Amino acid sequence: MITASVVVWLRILGTAQWLLDETGSAVLVGLIGVVQLVVQIPALLWGGTLADRIDRKRLMALANAMTSVTLLTLGFLNWHGLLSPVMVYAGIALTAASQMLANPARSALVPVVVPQRDLLVAVSTDTASANAAAIAGPLLFAAVTVSAGLSATFLLAGAISALSTLLPLLIRAKGIATGHAEEAATSTVQQTVAGLRYVSRHPILPGLFLLDAGITVASFYREILPVLALGLFAGGASATGMLGAANSTGAIAGSFLALLFVGYRAKGMLVLYASFAYGFILFGFGLANTLWLGMLMIAALGAADSVTVAVRQTTVMLTTPDHMRGRAFALMILAAQTANNIGTIWVGAWAGAIGAANTMLLGGVISVVATALIWWFWRPIREFRS
Image 1: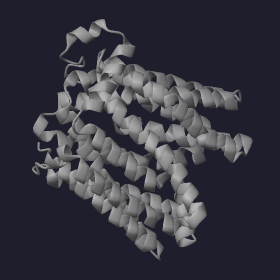
Image 2 (image 1 turned 90 degrees about the vertical axis):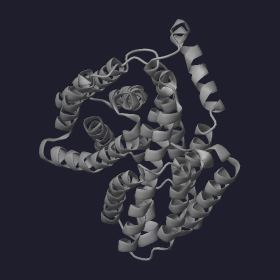
Image 3 (image 1 turned 60 degrees about the vertical axis):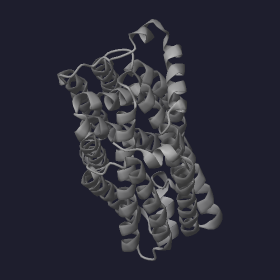
């Protein structure tokens, strides 16, 4: 998990920096998001189905191998002065697709490897690892790029991804999903449709996905931290960096906070409590009048978000049969990724129209209302016990 997450950060920052250095165009850098969005949706749906159809360990290994070859190619081409923007976008598309192919398989393997009683511990540790990589990845990028250049960054990312190719094959648990062997005779499209149908009829998952989407769309701040740093605290790059570091640190702390609730059976209510807390903390972030108070609030946001992520993923694992887990996780990731992209547009637009502080206050209102509506109308979430 850590190696794959570090590679993602090296790829994201490395390609963005290359495009900015070579073209000087913020618009061309922004096109990275368009390329990723177009590629990730079909890759996720296909990856979820493949995770329920073939050996998940081999799927992860092949996806990581594709990432490794792509990044090594970018490094060698740049080293010889042959790299072009079109090639960079192609590399972004391939690595974004391979990441989405691997993610459902990795998530679906966790309940096979870890005993059910320890799932929340495993997911919380996994979330903490991802947030630790969000700190280590940018630091490693800065150190390597400054000292050795972008070619070295791409080559290092490719080498780390090559290591990630081998690691899934060392897992001793069975990689092929169990149950409903008759699905093997159906096509990938039919299996994908069956997964969509299953999740749509699930008593809990649609409500959890809607809750996450509603809150995220109203308040997604990570991609536009520079806008919030300027609007809330009149700060520049240093304020952005401090807010980002505080958020990641809080997210790591929140992952370990979730461990305190391993024995708490009302997991559905736990998600709702954390979501209410997230909404009220947004008020504090919007009202913060100093950078230090803002860092405290955004750290608390990261902590509350980590608790909801850990419990939501654990709920998918506990309530979904093994032969459907890949597709269920694919749809969960798809909902989150789509909400992130829409949320970036939403928060950016409102910050420009009514100011950053009022946008966070509006996000707090929407988050609390959305949580209250899910609590009131989605009874199975309130009653879910594990």
